[in-house]
Length: 445
Image (cartoon, rainbow, N blue to C red; front, side, top):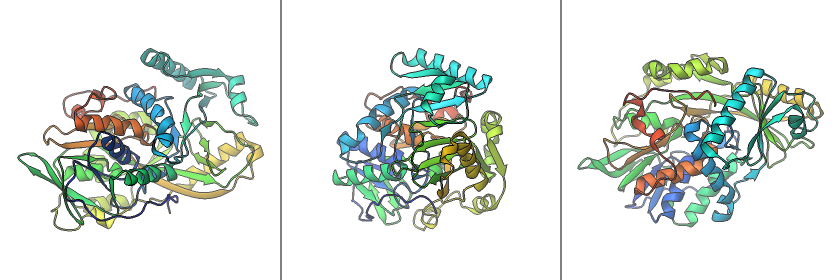
């Protein structure tokens, strides 16, 4: 079972008409709904399962600028600003805390990569961020009680953490109080158009007329868009995490190296992950999209475990096009809840205890896994769809969605309403995958 998520009351009473329908009740969809509502738009958000049921409650909870791809660096800066004010603005508790994030290493090549990223970030952002290089003594000061020594690293005091199981539900409850329709469980089957542009969405409970639709369906976005004849390249990787029971005396900074990553939780325990190791389940889409993903495959081969199993055959049998007057897979599978890779999570915990032997009494309270939606260049699609006016996509965050979610939602709200965008959106356009743009994986990430 996945982590326990804070409660948001179910509501299946559809409005007859709104300005915008948001498809997906994760941090991206909710942030989009938030900033659309702030612009005076009438908004309905439809979630097929429950709010934050998938990756929005299963991630590390990091909110960072450090080591972002330069194409999403400005977005991460803006998002951190929003996280710092979100609780006060909405009157909620997301668990956000400025704790600092450390990337430490004992490897010369990795340290050189850190320095290269820092130089590029300073060139882009100037004084807008506070990342510094730290030496072995600096790392030791940030990790009191550590038995392992590290050569150095990057530290950003302004980076923070929030609680994934709390944040999106808190935003949803605040939006409901503001009059936004939060519809759960309410699967969207597809859209209707009139004169070539969006005119409605068809849900399992009926039709909602609207002028715009934002697809923020995370792992489901490619399948949904495919039924609209919109080519969205996106694959899923399975990431595993564990949490410990509360334990005293550990570090308060969040930190990562190639073997493990951790953050202190609001409940006093730790969320621990096995570095950036993931599982990639071979599926029919892996073969359909192989050539687009070759740069990513070369970049991440050492961190991925590739295998084939039941998911290949499940997706092979799954319909890729469907009528809107019959139940769909979105009603059949309300929540993706994959099995964690115990070998990965427990290896991360062993590395954590090796680094902090005084925490050897740490007890595993839960393990879980989630599917990360990854694009060929590992940056999101935040874009309109040229061939269908009124259709927008906000997905493919490649494991970065929780941290940059608020700014991604704000940028999408700007695009939907044709306002001045929060940041330059060109890097996030959908047609970069079809207009001849070279697919590039940022080595700095």
